[in-house]
Length: 258
Image (cartoon, rainbow, N blue to C red; front, side, top):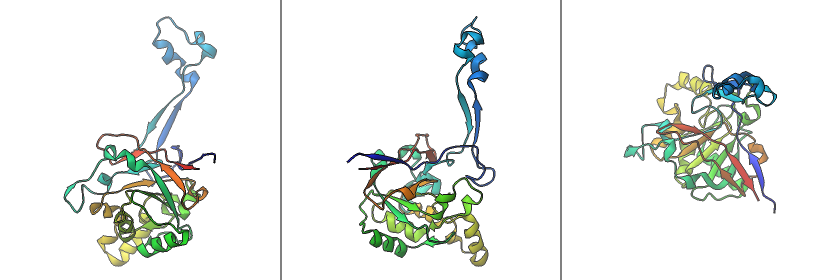
């Protein structure tokens, strides 16, 4: 069987809808013509017109947070400690590499309403539907309604999210890397804020992330193209960029079929 590669990553681009206001990336492009004088500066006496077609190099300057684009969160992002407070939470440069090349399973929750908090029972029902038994270190990807509107207005408010109960259901079974095509693993903040206004229960704030206080796990956000995947039978490759002592790293996530 011929192997097929499916890109599960989004572009880093100038788009104000990929993140909340003030958090989107900025990319500045320098063209071949604009850089020619800079190239010539390295070689005294060289003129722009001496270069082939008068062109230098293309280069980009980018202003990013580690949570722009498709990225992997480290347990350090969720809380300063993990394993029930017994040790410091790991940074992104401390992820075991063998966690990043593993069999994948996709949970299809596109039918769930925006802001819905996925329960352990809903995960169990989906696993039963797709006839998949979780194995330790499977990479679990969650397909939500947000994936279809990435980069469009309202993206950050779209999709269901994983609560504490659902997250612990996975991590208690040996899952250490998960992912979602939504802006966050948790339900969108706008929906949680409405619930908070009604209940003032602090336990609902970022509850899926905060489950990492108990069992450490690594979380990929802003995935793309999950609808192109089968429920299982594929491999996920998701090595993050190595940034010392950071809370996250940009990640080119690819699924391999066959």
